[in-house]
Length: 325
Image (spheres, rainbow, N blue to C red):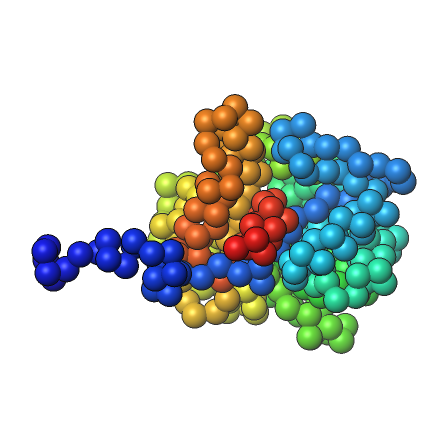
């Protein structure tokens, strides 16, 4: 087809036709909203690097979760800020830890909302790493035991899904076996299967107070230069029992999202991470971009690349934009 017989602008010229032939759809049902639950009461502290995102005590978090649910957002994912941290992240798997109590209250107050929990130790350790430290590095196998305890404690609290983000080898199989052995074979696992050691996580580390106190996380998170490794990581997690796999970060790794989508037909999530969010917010505040247009373009880029689900701090804004049409 060539001009002048084919004129693409015939279709582009009317909004109704553009909608009718649109190749990629975006729905509020695609969204998962990350939230930060803080120990204490009366807390609603805006994260300085993430305008519109808050560290919140449970009563405020529940109120915002209710708002998200009323906007049609089907699920939230929780990150915890405990009262105290120690070398082994004890609050992560405590019966009355911050996340466990938040899950109970959410399921009581907003029962129709799906509650997902991040399973990792970095928010709870005093050194900021994702597991038990031995000889200056995270020890894989001793960390697995604590991750299993954490996931089980979330299940006992009533969570709908767990999402291990630690990147320890073998953690999906270990958690799956633990959940199954304790009667929670119905709880799905969303695995951070392809998680890169990225500079885009900076604002999150402020929000979750989880910055490493020494070194970095390159011994357990993936090298940004690697593509084939992403397929291996996703394949291993699926073999170990993951129900949903995730690529994180999102925008700098759309090629990886597409590679994983082409390789596997199970549900695929992408995390539109804190650094991506903060850059959009900063540029919009300076008047450099049209925030609404850029946010929707970003969401469509994830869907076009093959993602089914999008974890994004923009979730409430996107829901409002979709409702507005």
